[in-house]
Image (cartoon, rainbow over all chains, first blue to last red; front, side, top):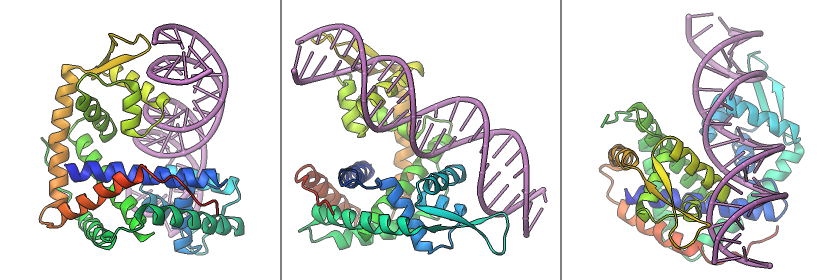
Length: 143
Length: 143
DNA sequence: AAAGATTGACTAATCAATCTTG
DNA sequence: CAAGATTGATTAGTCAATCTTT
């Protein structure tokens, strides 16, 4: 379980570090950046559905998140052409800009932390493999 | 930044998986388990102060967390012998029990996910090294 | 004054109930 | 009735103000 402990601790620490850097440079905060990046990845064709999956939060939370993004002028819902239950979520120009600006800082901080380490690629590969694996096998002991 | 993305994603996924397993087996939830483990690590001599640091949440949040743990009968504040501003937080017998029960399930799930992978030790070492590193060098670009 | 903690006002997540469209 | 999303009530976190002890 040591792996799990360190994983959690390091992820939290790094997330917070990037978050602080963003806030300190007068920007949007890591959670918002994370959402914008996911939306931007779908390139204007993302729905609440997918944001929920991408962020691993509930549908309700994702819906409210988009409310906030709209309120802050970073994204907007546009009617889905084929399915009137759904909206397509696209970044506004301001949202695009904030996303790029944020990514620059994030990249900087991460590079700063990882700088000089040679086995990042290996660790990335390992985590990546585990990430694949975790989709399957939901059998769980009921201890 | 790919490393960061995968790190965040995998940590979230694994955390949620363990959380679901705990809930499904009628137990306490990962956040609570995490807190109990940290308190148990200090073996009855932990203060709100330290819980805050261990969980990487604010002092206020840690204080309220302990309120909840007390309300649920999992931990209790005992007056600090030397410093009357502070309390020492110890697990109740129920808390100890819940912690052990939870750890068993967590261990099971993690083993299930990591099972058969040979380079966990290497990844753990890398993350561990980075965790050390991250304490220092708080200089940050103001892009 | 500084350190440790608590509290109140606010923000964000969850869950369940609901509404609409397929 | 399923699928997609929204909303309301509750729970947990942040931040700032405060209180007590050092």
